[in-house]
Length: 502
Image (cartoon, rainbow, N blue to C red; front, side):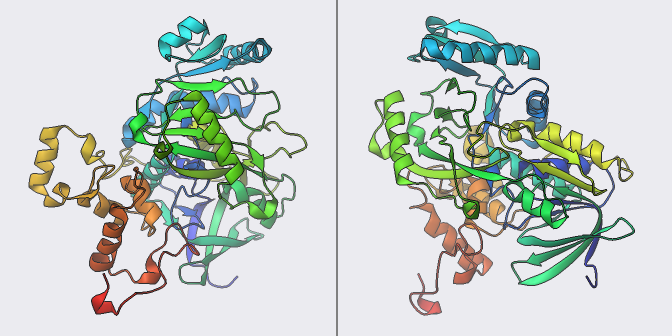
């Protein structure tokens, strides 16, 4: 393959929550680590396009990796989120039997939860459920207090930036195109630098395939043809923060045994919004990265939202989005397969496929399992200077006590200038997001780090101010402004001459 640009002990392909959790865990060791991601930021696939639920473990067959790693990962989340300063709310979940026909499924979940070691479960009648969530329907329910909510992209970004602070190299906008294992057991990786349209070449002793929806394609590059991924789209509506506090807990229906998901439900978020969804519809292979929200599903979600929350106004539906699950079961089979996390027949090639729900919950536990697999191929050399804290992030300004906000404004006047009115985000927070340590350069990167454009006006007030800031203070030209990535450009040029541009 010619000259090698970089030499690594371990190279991770894919910077979703699982890939970066592995990167952070391996950064506890002094081996050289790299992460390749084809998108211009971490967490732009399924890791930012889900409900953000920390699952208890009741939905998974005992003895499977989904069950074992889901329960283990759930138990690890409090310490992990404390270290990374990521909000986690243990609001619990009610899985509700609406009719007599749902009861066998509900009792099956209870027995699975017992077998999986889910803590604190309790079966409840309707009056007991209503003490937790006023107005909830159903004849019986299963309460799991260990369930919670988190910002999925917030966790992914925090994991990645902490891994980077501990020495992991990130190659964003870098798409793997070839994998070759030499006779000496070293892999050569060819990847296209999408920003500069040039090839980069890497050498590594271990490859971890954590490419999510594209993991089967990466495996085929390495010569592994088994294990097909089917994309299954889940669509959501996002409701305005006016409704914050309406839901005290998660409320789910009892899923069917062969359902591809857990059913449409209302999910509160850590930021105060409510999500309606997700749907679960298989999509063609060529549409794996088609994240469009479709009119028929949106109408269905709106009807469901109005049924569950009759006082909703049309203005409460502020946006929608979709995410595609990497399923290992075909549309004909349905249901869910177990996670694939394994050493393969190709020494040094570790494969992760079909990491759908509860992948977010399981991510820290998956990282430990993959660490043990890596140790079979190379010596992991412990280091004493690992820093578990998320560098530079102390929380959102508007969430701080009044006196702390006054002190920050006194030390930096940019904390006193509001850029995003809906979410009360300051200019300093926007600047910190723009200057993120990973070098991500999209408006989505600013949105996920600073919460800007997430409010009722969806960027109507703050987006022009962020654009002006990027142009005037960071030298952005029109072609530099990307909403999400290559192909999603925001501007074609200036309406007026450069000197007169607004």
